[in-house]
Length: 86
Image 1 (cartoon, rainbow, N blue to C red):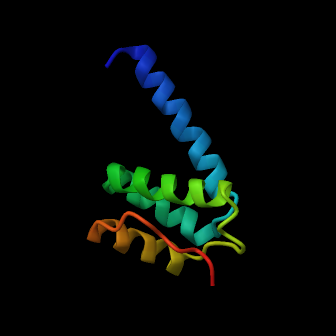
Image 2 (image 1 turned 180 degrees about the vertical axis):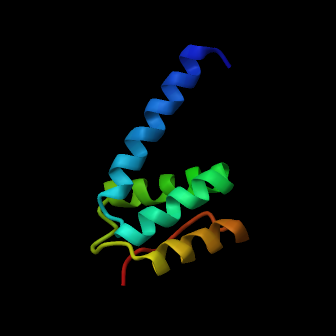
């Protein structure tokens, strides 16, 4: 990967984070930061799922820390689809 590709991916991740953080609680954002440091690949998968769901209007309330933990568990289990409606 060259510098230009890395910069582009970094910018895409920043956009995803911005979209996802709009629907996440303060605690969930804090947990995301911790996961991002310890398990960057899992964090990127989680933030991508949340950002896509937010963009599609599937999230109708703030995602709590518990909700974020549940998403992380599902990612670890290899689940590919998520249901955000309650």
